Image (cartoon, rainbow, N blue to C red; front, side, top):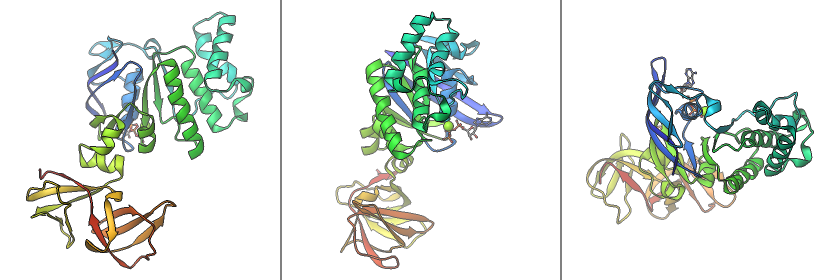
Length: 344
Ligand SMILES: Nc1ncnc2c1ncn2[C@@H]1O[C@H](COP(=O)(O)OP(=O)(O)OP(=O)(O)O)[C@@H](O)[C@H]1O
Ligand SMILES: [Mg+2]
Protein backbone atom coordinates (compact mmCIF):
# COMPACT_ATOMS: atom_id res chain seq x y z
CA UNK A 1 0.00 0.00 0.00
CA UNK A 2 1.25 3.45 -0.92
CA UNK A 3 1.27 5.94 1.95
CA UNK A 4 2.60 8.94 0.02
CA UNK A 5 2.79 9.45 -3.72
CA UNK A 6 4.57 12.42 -5.25
CA UNK A 7 3.98 12.79 -8.97
CA UNK A 8 5.89 15.24 -11.12
CA UNK A 9 6.35 17.84 -8.39
CA UNK A 10 7.72 21.19 -9.46
CA UNK A 11 8.62 24.13 -7.27
CA UNK A 12 10.44 27.35 -8.04
CA UNK A 13 11.25 30.34 -5.87
CA UNK A 14 11.08 33.34 -8.18
CA UNK A 15 12.63 32.10 -11.39
CA UNK A 16 14.89 29.52 -9.74
CA UNK A 17 13.60 25.96 -10.02
CA UNK A 18 14.27 24.13 -6.77
CA UNK A 19 12.33 20.89 -7.26
CA UNK A 20 12.09 19.61 -10.83
CA UNK A 21 9.70 16.85 -11.82
CA UNK A 22 10.09 14.83 -8.65
CA UNK A 23 8.27 11.50 -8.52
CA UNK A 24 8.41 9.17 -5.52
CA UNK A 25 6.21 6.60 -3.80
CA UNK A 26 6.58 5.80 -0.12
CA UNK A 27 4.97 2.56 1.03
CA UNK A 28 3.07 2.21 4.28
CA UNK A 29 5.43 1.69 7.21
CA UNK A 30 8.47 2.44 5.09
CA UNK A 31 11.31 4.79 6.01
CA UNK A 32 12.48 6.68 2.94
CA UNK A 33 15.33 9.15 3.20
CA UNK A 34 15.87 12.18 0.99
CA UNK A 35 19.65 12.47 0.86
CA UNK A 36 21.60 15.17 -0.92
CA UNK A 37 23.86 18.19 -0.63
CA UNK A 38 22.78 21.51 0.82
CA UNK A 39 20.32 23.35 -1.38
CA UNK A 40 19.22 20.33 -3.48
CA UNK A 41 15.57 20.73 -2.47
CA UNK A 42 15.12 18.25 0.40
CA UNK A 43 13.39 20.62 2.84
CA UNK A 44 11.28 22.10 0.05
CA UNK A 45 10.06 18.60 -0.87
CA UNK A 46 9.28 17.79 2.76
CA UNK A 47 7.43 21.09 3.20
CA UNK A 48 5.29 20.30 0.16
CA UNK A 49 4.38 16.90 1.66
CA UNK A 50 3.54 18.68 4.91
CA UNK A 51 1.39 21.27 3.17
CA UNK A 52 3.59 24.18 4.24
CA UNK A 53 4.39 24.87 0.58
CA UNK A 54 2.21 24.29 -2.45
CA UNK A 55 3.76 22.73 -5.58
CA UNK A 56 3.71 24.80 -8.78
CA UNK A 57 2.84 21.61 -10.66
CA UNK A 58 2.31 17.94 -9.89
CA UNK A 59 0.17 16.02 -7.45
CA UNK A 60 0.65 14.73 -3.89
CA UNK A 61 -1.46 11.82 -2.65
CA UNK A 62 -1.57 10.58 0.90
CA UNK A 63 -3.37 7.32 1.60
CA UNK A 64 -4.87 7.52 -1.89
CA UNK A 65 -6.38 10.97 -1.36
CA UNK A 66 -5.09 13.96 -3.34
CA UNK A 67 -3.84 16.50 -0.77
CA UNK A 68 -2.12 18.86 -3.19
CA UNK A 69 -2.68 19.41 -6.87
CA UNK A 70 -4.35 21.78 -9.28
CA UNK A 71 -7.13 23.44 -7.28
CA UNK A 72 -6.62 21.17 -4.26
CA UNK A 73 -4.77 22.18 -1.13
CA UNK A 74 -5.46 20.22 2.06
CA UNK A 75 -4.06 22.20 5.03
CA UNK A 76 -1.20 20.68 7.09
CA UNK A 77 -3.35 19.88 10.13
CA UNK A 78 -5.65 17.72 8.01
CA UNK A 79 -2.88 15.59 6.47
CA UNK A 80 -2.49 13.30 9.50
CA UNK A 81 1.21 13.83 9.96
CA UNK A 82 3.76 14.69 12.59
CA UNK A 83 6.89 16.74 12.01
CA UNK A 84 10.30 17.02 13.67
CA UNK A 85 12.81 19.65 12.61
CA UNK A 86 16.49 20.31 13.10
CA UNK A 87 15.82 23.09 15.59
CA UNK A 88 14.07 21.51 18.54
CA UNK A 89 11.02 23.78 18.31
CA UNK A 90 10.07 22.98 21.89
CA UNK A 91 8.12 25.72 23.73
CA UNK A 92 10.49 27.10 26.38
CA UNK A 93 7.80 28.18 28.86
CA UNK A 94 6.01 24.81 28.96
CA UNK A 95 7.10 21.66 30.77
CA UNK A 96 8.02 18.50 28.86
CA UNK A 97 4.58 17.09 29.63
CA UNK A 98 2.76 20.24 28.52
CA UNK A 99 4.77 20.36 25.30
CA UNK A 100 3.83 16.80 24.44
CA UNK A 101 0.19 17.32 25.48
CA UNK A 102 -0.25 20.36 23.25
CA UNK A 103 -1.45 18.64 20.03
CA UNK A 104 -4.01 16.63 22.04
CA UNK A 105 -5.19 19.67 24.00
CA UNK A 106 -5.80 21.41 20.66
CA UNK A 107 -8.11 18.55 19.70
CA UNK A 108 -9.99 19.05 22.97
CA UNK A 109 -9.19 15.56 24.25
CA UNK A 110 -10.60 14.76 27.74
CA UNK A 111 -8.02 15.19 30.52
CA UNK A 112 -7.75 11.58 31.69
CA UNK A 113 -7.24 10.20 28.21
CA UNK A 114 -4.81 13.01 27.39
CA UNK A 115 -2.71 12.26 30.46
CA UNK A 116 -2.45 8.59 29.65
CA UNK A 117 -1.54 9.28 26.00
CA UNK A 118 1.16 11.74 27.07
CA UNK A 119 2.60 9.21 29.51
CA UNK A 120 2.73 6.60 26.77
CA UNK A 121 4.44 8.96 24.31
CA UNK A 122 7.01 9.92 26.97
CA UNK A 123 7.66 6.23 27.55
CA UNK A 124 8.31 5.71 23.81
CA UNK A 125 11.14 8.25 23.96
CA UNK A 126 12.26 7.27 27.48
CA UNK A 127 11.47 10.62 29.09
CA UNK A 128 8.91 9.49 31.72
CA UNK A 129 11.19 10.58 34.54
CA UNK A 130 11.52 14.12 33.16
CA UNK A 131 7.83 14.86 32.55
CA UNK A 132 7.69 17.96 34.74
CA UNK A 133 11.10 19.41 33.74
CA UNK A 134 11.28 22.71 31.90
CA UNK A 135 13.09 22.73 28.52
CA UNK A 136 16.00 24.92 29.73
CA UNK A 137 17.01 22.07 32.03
CA UNK A 138 17.24 19.50 29.21
CA UNK A 139 20.10 18.44 26.95
CA UNK A 140 19.90 18.68 23.15
CA UNK A 141 19.15 14.98 22.86
CA UNK A 142 16.38 15.22 25.46
CA UNK A 143 14.87 18.25 23.72
CA UNK A 144 14.81 16.37 20.45
CA UNK A 145 13.07 13.46 22.21
CA UNK A 146 10.39 15.90 23.45
CA UNK A 147 9.89 17.06 19.86
CA UNK A 148 9.66 13.42 18.73
CA UNK A 149 7.10 12.55 21.43
CA UNK A 150 5.04 15.62 20.55
CA UNK A 151 5.08 14.68 16.86
CA UNK A 152 3.98 11.11 17.63
CA UNK A 153 1.47 11.62 20.45
CA UNK A 154 -1.55 12.08 18.21
CA UNK A 155 -0.76 8.84 16.36
CA UNK A 156 0.10 10.25 12.92
CA UNK A 157 0.24 7.83 9.99
CA UNK A 158 3.24 9.72 8.61
CA UNK A 159 6.17 11.31 10.38
CA UNK A 160 8.33 13.86 8.55
CA UNK A 161 11.81 14.42 9.95
CA UNK A 162 14.05 17.23 8.65
CA UNK A 163 17.64 16.71 9.85
CA UNK A 164 16.38 15.92 13.37
CA UNK A 165 19.79 14.73 14.54
CA UNK A 166 22.15 17.28 13.04
CA UNK A 167 22.35 19.49 16.16
CA UNK A 168 23.45 16.58 18.32
CA UNK A 169 26.94 15.27 19.02
CA UNK A 170 28.05 12.04 17.35
CA UNK A 171 27.26 9.67 20.24
CA UNK A 172 23.78 11.11 20.83
CA UNK A 173 23.10 11.08 17.13
CA UNK A 174 23.69 7.33 16.97
CA UNK A 175 21.63 6.71 20.06
CA UNK A 176 18.64 8.68 18.81
CA UNK A 177 19.02 7.18 15.35
CA UNK A 178 18.57 3.73 16.89
CA UNK A 179 15.57 4.96 18.86
CA UNK A 180 13.88 6.32 15.74
CA UNK A 181 14.38 2.93 14.07
CA UNK A 182 12.95 1.16 17.13
CA UNK A 183 9.95 3.50 17.29
CA UNK A 184 9.16 2.88 13.69
CA UNK A 185 9.26 -0.87 14.20
CA UNK A 186 7.00 -0.52 17.20
CA UNK A 187 4.48 2.00 15.86
CA UNK A 188 4.62 1.15 12.14
CA UNK A 189 4.66 4.85 11.28
CA UNK A 190 5.60 5.73 7.71
CA UNK A 191 8.61 8.08 7.83
CA UNK A 192 10.23 10.49 5.42
CA UNK A 193 13.63 11.45 6.74
CA UNK A 194 15.80 14.25 5.39
CA UNK A 195 19.55 14.32 5.85
CA UNK A 196 22.76 15.26 4.07
CA UNK A 197 24.67 12.67 6.11
CA UNK A 198 25.17 9.55 4.02
CA UNK A 199 26.12 7.37 7.01
CA UNK A 200 22.86 8.26 8.74
CA UNK A 201 20.89 7.53 5.58
CA UNK A 202 22.59 4.17 5.01
CA UNK A 203 22.03 3.08 8.61
CA UNK A 204 18.39 4.06 8.96
CA UNK A 205 16.58 3.77 5.64
CA UNK A 206 14.58 1.14 3.82
CA UNK A 207 15.19 3.14 0.66
CA UNK A 208 17.18 6.27 -0.09
CA UNK A 209 16.34 8.89 -2.70
CA UNK A 210 19.58 10.65 -3.62
CA UNK A 211 18.74 14.18 -4.71
CA UNK A 212 20.82 16.55 -6.77
CA UNK A 213 19.69 19.94 -8.10
CA UNK A 214 16.00 19.28 -7.47
CA UNK A 215 15.76 15.80 -8.99
CA UNK A 216 16.11 12.26 -7.66
CA UNK A 217 19.23 10.75 -9.23
CA UNK A 218 18.70 7.31 -7.75
CA UNK A 219 16.15 5.61 -5.51
CA UNK A 220 17.30 2.32 -4.02
CA UNK A 221 17.87 0.27 -0.90
CA UNK A 222 21.04 1.34 0.97
CA UNK A 223 23.18 -1.67 -0.01
CA UNK A 224 22.22 -1.48 -3.64
CA UNK A 225 22.86 2.26 -3.72
CA UNK A 226 26.30 1.80 -2.18
CA UNK A 227 27.29 -1.19 -4.33
CA UNK A 228 25.72 -0.12 -7.60
CA UNK A 229 25.62 3.67 -7.81
CA UNK A 230 23.82 4.63 -10.98
CA UNK A 231 25.61 7.91 -11.58
CA UNK A 232 29.04 9.40 -10.73
CA UNK A 233 27.27 11.88 -8.43
CA UNK A 234 25.67 9.10 -6.38
CA UNK A 235 28.99 7.24 -6.19
CA UNK A 236 30.80 10.29 -4.92
CA UNK A 237 28.05 11.46 -2.56
CA UNK A 238 27.20 8.09 -1.04
CA UNK A 239 30.48 6.18 -1.25
CA UNK A 240 32.89 9.12 -1.18
CA UNK A 241 34.20 7.82 -4.53
CA UNK A 242 36.81 9.59 -6.63
CA UNK A 243 35.33 10.80 -9.91
CA UNK A 244 37.77 11.38 -12.79
CA UNK A 245 36.99 12.43 -16.34
CA UNK A 246 39.13 11.36 -19.26
CA UNK A 247 39.62 8.94 -22.13
CA UNK A 248 39.92 5.17 -22.27
CA UNK A 249 42.50 3.79 -24.68
CA UNK A 250 43.30 0.07 -24.81
CA UNK A 251 42.42 -0.58 -21.18
CA UNK A 252 44.21 2.50 -19.87
CA UNK A 253 42.39 5.54 -18.49
CA UNK A 254 44.01 8.91 -19.32
CA UNK A 255 42.90 11.80 -17.08
CA UNK A 256 41.61 14.78 -19.06
CA UNK A 257 44.18 17.57 -19.31
CA UNK A 258 46.68 15.75 -17.07
CA UNK A 259 49.70 13.55 -17.71
CA UNK A 260 48.37 10.85 -15.38
CA UNK A 261 47.01 7.53 -16.58
CA UNK A 262 45.71 4.45 -14.76
CA UNK A 263 45.67 0.87 -15.96
CA UNK A 264 42.08 -0.33 -15.64
CA UNK A 265 41.49 -3.53 -13.68
CA UNK A 266 41.13 -6.69 -15.77
CA UNK A 267 37.51 -7.62 -16.32
CA UNK A 268 36.26 -4.03 -16.41
CA UNK A 269 34.64 -3.78 -19.79
CA UNK A 270 35.98 -0.57 -21.29
CA UNK A 271 35.40 0.65 -24.80
CA UNK A 272 37.78 3.29 -26.14
CA UNK A 273 36.51 6.87 -25.85
CA UNK A 274 35.50 9.54 -23.36
CA UNK A 275 34.52 8.24 -19.95
CA UNK A 276 34.11 9.02 -16.28
CA UNK A 277 36.07 6.77 -13.96
CA UNK A 278 34.61 6.23 -10.49
CA UNK A 279 36.85 4.61 -7.86
CA UNK A 280 36.18 4.22 -4.15
CA UNK A 281 39.10 5.20 -1.89
CA UNK A 282 39.30 1.62 -0.58
CA UNK A 283 39.60 0.29 -4.14
CA UNK A 284 42.90 2.09 -4.74
CA UNK A 285 45.90 0.05 -3.70
CA UNK A 286 49.27 1.49 -2.70
CA UNK A 287 52.19 -0.78 -3.40
CA UNK A 288 54.83 -1.82 -5.88
CA UNK A 289 52.65 -1.45 -8.97
CA UNK A 290 50.66 1.31 -10.55
CA UNK A 291 50.78 4.98 -11.39
CA UNK A 292 53.39 7.08 -9.63
CA UNK A 293 51.83 9.97 -7.73
CA UNK A 294 53.20 12.42 -5.17
CA UNK A 295 51.57 12.14 -1.74
CA UNK A 296 50.27 15.46 -0.39
CA UNK A 297 48.81 14.25 2.91
CA UNK A 298 48.32 11.17 5.06
CA UNK A 299 45.44 11.18 7.55
CA UNK A 300 45.53 8.60 10.31
CA UNK A 301 42.06 7.08 10.76
CA UNK A 302 42.89 4.57 13.49
CA UNK A 303 42.06 1.30 11.76
CA UNK A 304 43.38 2.63 8.43
CA UNK A 305 44.81 5.75 6.84
CA UNK A 306 43.67 8.06 4.08
CA UNK A 307 46.23 9.08 1.47
CA UNK A 308 45.74 12.15 -0.68
CA UNK A 309 47.28 12.82 -4.08
CA UNK A 310 46.74 16.06 -6.00
CA UNK A 311 45.41 15.34 -9.46
CA UNK A 312 45.00 18.59 -11.36
CA UNK A 313 42.50 20.60 -9.35
CA UNK A 314 41.02 17.61 -7.55
CA UNK A 315 42.37 15.28 -4.90
CA UNK A 316 42.60 11.55 -5.37
CA UNK A 317 41.82 9.83 -2.07
CA UNK A 318 42.93 6.31 -1.19
CA UNK A 319 42.17 4.44 2.02
CA UNK A 320 44.23 1.46 3.13
CA UNK A 321 46.60 0.02 5.72
CA UNK A 322 48.65 2.49 7.74
CA UNK A 323 52.03 2.92 6.02
CA UNK A 324 55.09 4.76 7.20
CA UNK A 325 55.15 7.37 4.45
CA UNK A 326 55.46 11.15 4.38
CA UNK A 327 53.96 13.92 2.27
CA UNK A 328 56.29 14.69 -0.62
CA UNK A 329 57.11 11.04 -1.17
CA UNK A 330 56.08 9.39 -4.44
CA UNK A 331 53.87 6.31 -4.16
CA UNK A 332 52.49 3.83 -6.67
CA UNK A 333 48.71 3.71 -6.93
CA UNK A 334 46.84 0.85 -8.58
CA UNK A 335 43.12 0.75 -9.42
CA UNK A 336 41.84 -2.55 -8.04
CA UNK A 337 38.16 -2.03 -8.76
CA UNK A 338 36.26 0.75 -10.53
CA UNK A 339 33.17 1.69 -12.46
CA UNK A 340 33.17 3.45 -15.78
CA UNK A 341 30.38 5.67 -16.99
CA UNK A 342 29.96 6.60 -20.64
CA UNK A 343 32.25 3.99 -22.20
CA UNK A 344 30.32 0.73 -21.85
N1 LIG B 1 11.37 30.54 0.91
C1 LIG B 1 12.35 30.54 0.00
N2 LIG B 1 12.54 31.59 -0.84
C2 LIG B 1 13.52 31.58 -1.77
N3 LIG B 1 14.39 30.57 -1.95
C3 LIG B 1 14.26 29.50 -1.14
C4 LIG B 1 13.24 29.42 -0.13
N4 LIG B 1 13.37 28.23 0.51
C5 LIG B 1 14.41 27.60 -0.07
N5 LIG B 1 14.95 28.34 -1.07
C6 LIG B 1 16.08 27.96 -1.93
O1 LIG B 1 15.75 26.75 -2.55
C7 LIG B 1 16.85 25.86 -2.63
C8 LIG B 1 16.52 24.55 -1.96
O2 LIG B 1 16.32 24.77 -0.59
P1 LIG B 1 16.01 23.61 0.43
O3 LIG B 1 15.82 24.24 1.75
O4 LIG B 1 14.92 22.75 -0.09
O5 LIG B 1 17.37 22.79 0.38
P2 LIG B 1 17.87 21.59 1.29
O6 LIG B 1 18.18 20.47 0.35
O7 LIG B 1 16.93 21.32 2.38
O8 LIG B 1 19.27 22.14 1.84
P3 LIG B 1 19.94 22.03 3.33
O9 LIG B 1 20.64 20.69 3.35
O10 LIG B 1 20.91 23.15 3.34
O11 LIG B 1 18.86 22.16 4.35
C9 LIG B 1 18.01 26.60 -1.98
O12 LIG B 1 18.78 27.17 -3.01
C10 LIG B 1 17.33 27.66 -1.15
O13 LIG B 1 18.15 28.80 -1.03
MG1 LIG C 1 17.04 21.56 4.45
